[in-house]
Length: 149
Image 1 (cartoon, one colour):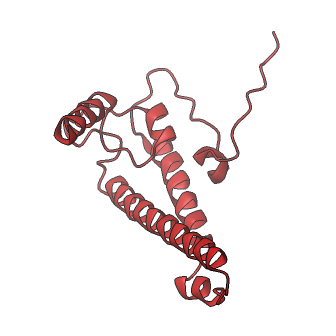
Image 2 (cartoon, rainbow, N blue to C red; image 1 turned 180 degrees about the horizontal axis):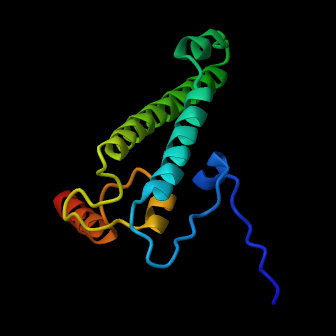
């Protein structure tokens, strides 16, 4: 039987960490040391990648030029604002990664912070910083939509 060649996105968290999807063995205990090690590698590599891509805000502002054309200045300001927003998102993600790494140390990783059920390996590989199971996350999103309406 031929194995299908499954193409992984280069933007995948697993690809960034250089690991394959975790293959759970039959009767394997949830969040055992192998699984914890798997997610620690993913999170720490992801964090290093985000820190490596950081550019100092001062460096960004040094690139600015005083364009006489108002359209050129507007484009430059918009690029600067976009860079600041991206930087803020990355900083927020680094904070979430640090919180998740702390949960690993405290042996609370992998379980829903609301109901305590297992989050699941596949969900955690897709979103390693997830702290809610899919059911609780769905309910949270429904509540958020109701508040906004």
